[in-house]
Length: 470
Image (cartoon, rainbow, N blue to C red; front, side, top):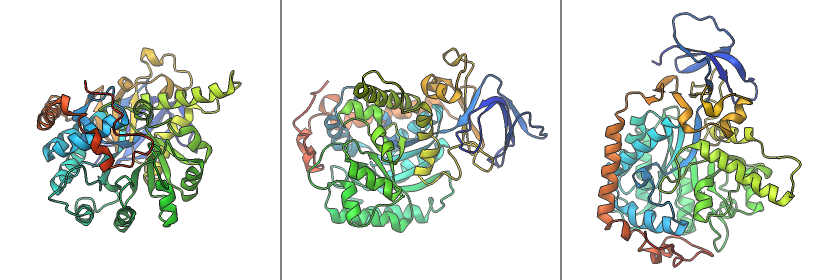
């Protein structure tokens, strides 16, 4: 049972439409839930955490991360999307063994927690066997993060003896749904990550139907480059398969019609501005999606090429969209996109997008105590002007002092609790070295651009467009 806590004397950013922020407030936490919020609460028999000079806010929610790729950190600093597909999806993914997936998932989930991310959507598309799936799930469970384990149906670039047909993957996802992930209230829940929809439509339909039979959320990469033929959203609409359980990732090349379709269906979009801007996946869809009325969220995507924390993602998303709007306006008279909208994207809107809006995403009595404590007395946040704006425009991951998930303190005074960080680092290093050795080293990573069109419709992009090796 989680401990009984009284968080005392902090600036409280509730992130909730019905509960105002508190300039100096207390939060009572019992059995993992927030039970009271206010000023100078008088409570006995609980642990007191004095937080004068600190800021308490909802935990951040990352709605798109390939957590298994953590051992590849920094290898793709100059990669385009074609480089990424050739190096990671074609070359490196088949070289990951279950122990490598476990090491990457554990390290990546702990990295997220350390940066104030209490919930993430783990788009796990490196599942070559049931052992790979179990290893990824174990990594999430050991980290103590709250997660949607989005089981990847993508077959990969090499045949898998364990999954000779898509139906074998469906059966393995069902194994998890009927076993360790049978509950929809567990710390880790099951979701499904679809294969990119350049496969035969019959298989895409079967994947969606499989996920719906399991009764779990669905996520998919969507319109990250211009493709031939109907878009993913259009195909889903034709078959009557759009719905609020769908989280579309990227949508940088989605037309206004597709955005209207997603909005009308109650679906959501995750933008990953750092990877999208670097890799040539088009301009982040954030502004257009918001204007179309689509619930929009943010994700970190791939640490092979960019950072794994959401403070940078919020700031980059906000300022790049403002810059584009300002360029159209000349000298702007106002800024239409507000900092507070970014904060909501990584808290309440993100929770709503993955079906957790009733239990997390904001601070209010009755919700889980998924929250973080920021050092508002740090130089980069002093003086604290508008707290919500300061979180978006001034804070960074280094300001995260404490983290609670379901009322359990998993980070305190700048350190992850109960975690041998050195051992986790060594596992990630061993995984990186082993995987690179299996593929022939760094120089071999970009050797298979010609194979890209065997797996993806690259539209106006061509597999020969490579930045070369490094």
